Length: 185
Image (cartoon, rainbow, N blue to C red; front, side, top):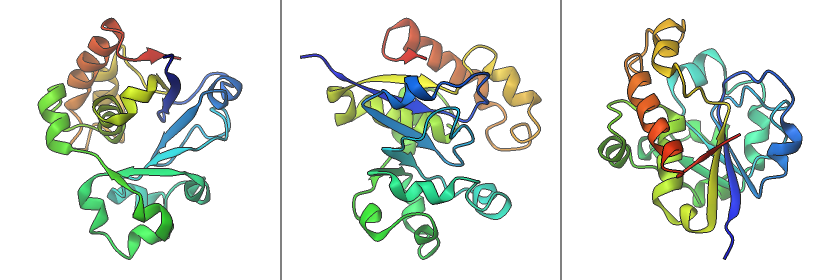
């Protein structure tokens, strides 16, 4: 049986409009602020809600926060579930009832990434749960080559707990691509 296609859209700036290709996928998952919404299409079937401090206090959920409520499936870390009533500023009660939680410990164990970013957490979840049985997983809007250097050079990443995770994430992503576990768009 041929698998359906799922794409995880990261927040790296797009150089051109990829909306037609992304919206043509069977399931589209977006992460946190959804910086590429528009150039990466308008579908939002799945959404990873991080609720990290900058997301809430600095960006107030991002320019596309209203779109979050359109997601049929929400993913988050278990710690996010404890952030009531704040969580309901972003998702509905119906979405909350169907949340799938990612495994921080499982991601660290399986990937070798000591402090995984939101995108790596949801990617790990998609590859190690029922999603992988039904879907071929694609990835876009994520730097692979030079990810370690990008984390060290980027003004928002080099001061966070993720600063040194870029090299580990780059190695894991390369393995996934080389082993044909994911496809890049």
